[in-house]
Length: 155
Image 1: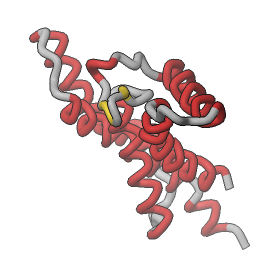
Image 2: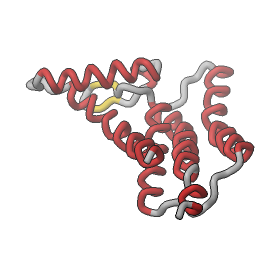
Image 3: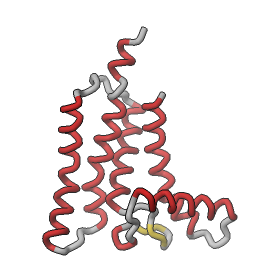
């Protein structure tokens, strides 16, 4: 149950991100539409720096999270959708294997950060998003496989 909720939440949050930008830019939006947008942007502010220059823009508005976060959430959503169609058959990885997977998944983002910090050059948002994708995918996959053994051993 928790696994399904997490995976559904990842997909829903990824859908909400562009919807909030759309809602925020509607000149004829209702109070509920604007309240939705404000809520999403406020939540995005808690989890992300929201720098407009580091964010994708839709309908003339910066998304509620930066490009890297967008990539992370998109990676989680894609993986969640894949495992909902084809559930993983592998057993829960050991803690060491899970840590290794997460470390490997962070390498692209770490490389972009090192590049930006050492050169002073900001990479394109699409590169930052692609670098974040493996983090979200790995996290969603670990959530998906975390209950495979328990399900297989239940009567």
